[in-house]
Image (cartoon, rainbow, N blue to C red):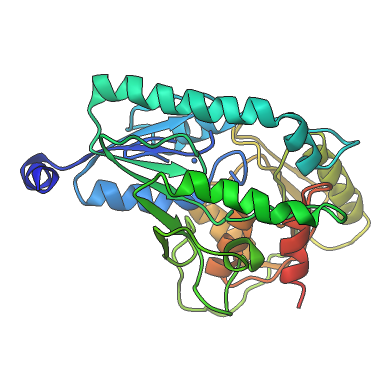
Length: 328
């Protein structure tokens, strides 16, 4: 009742954080930053709430550029190291102690900044430590299970129970997918028991779904790049080599928001980064899309009503599963 009174008077203060945001709610490019969070943040602004972001790592710069009008705090980062010799799940296993330590640090960090900012609510995009008994907390995640590599599937159930132990500490768990068989995440959100506080809210994308328009082809191929280095650069080089062998006009969106640069040579357009409307225009005018099979990308493709050639990041079992799940 106190919170409702405050909302009528002056609006909630949200802290929004992702793996890398916080909102006076809390929230987080794919793994680097969840652009799918954009519509939720915009909606909070429209409702008149005060929003503060929290992030870390490369995503920090993205959110600072995307919402320059909002304050942004730097939160404890999940410092996950990748390797070309081991799968992502193997690397997460080797670094599990560090991962759990970061969750504890997140929780302590939230408790500390709550004294200063007095948030009414916090929204967390896959940040498992951002809950507090003194304020309403919501976690947004489709990752309710971990897809383990062949031979280690017996770990999926105990890992699912561990995830439940964290998600159930939040007041709400929002799952960005459809409920039922016609869904985007497959086993990731539907195979095992849901958290007791879970609600399906439908896919989230920075792109609003629009009525289909007549297709006007500008590009034969469009490569949308993302993910950790050096794998992002390797896919970029492979795509550019392929495109140079065609006589068609092609596009590469490099996924590097730190520098707003573009190159136009021999029918090939290469952009480091594109704003939302220009991204929508160029992607919808491309005949064939090549991209990673991250879940945020799949939700964007759904909103844009585009099919794609999905190439999972090597070693990322979730992306390998999603690529197979959508191969039909």
